[in-house]
Image (cartoon, rainbow, N blue to C red):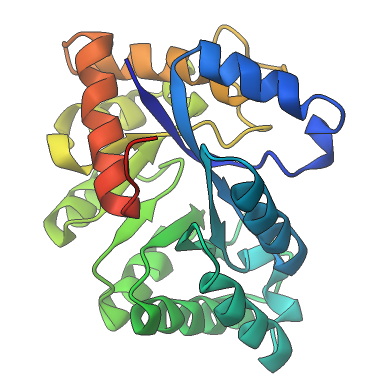
Length: 256
């Protein structure tokens, strides 16, 4: 069995001094490849370095909505330059976050739009962060019409899920799928077309049940995969095969 964790932040200090052990546990848990996701210039650079130094890791580069207030021509040019590095497979995570509003909403929208256009010009997929901003995320994606999109750690409602499927966009499910009283997410997972679903950890955040409260890591993805398989009434092995094939196709990565 092979599993791909499509969204991790292994460059963060949470893994300092433990990175090799975390990677070892991931391999022992059938995780064959990991997408390490940038959220600002520094983390994007670290993600690229991780990818270049570890065969099983790939990188994305982008500016998270929390960091949108720092956007300017220098950062834009750096993101474009980083995106051309070996093993950089997508632009992200980018999007809107109205829950914390750490950047002005108008600025978030402008930076989101600009990065979508960068991704389109580069022919790269897009990794979307959307929190309490469903309407504007959908509107901006409609305006710019990128082809390859994944809504990471999907938390939207059935309306957004169905809209995404009509557009051919992917949903990626993380630890919250395992949380109690989450019928909305379970419904989205149940109705998703087989070729548009992926799994992730978003580690070190959002550990799945029964490990909720601990620092998350790629090896914990199995619990999310088991939950997804139960919802879709298939074997874990089949679900792993489906999500792994989807991730490889979406990010244009080959077998390790």
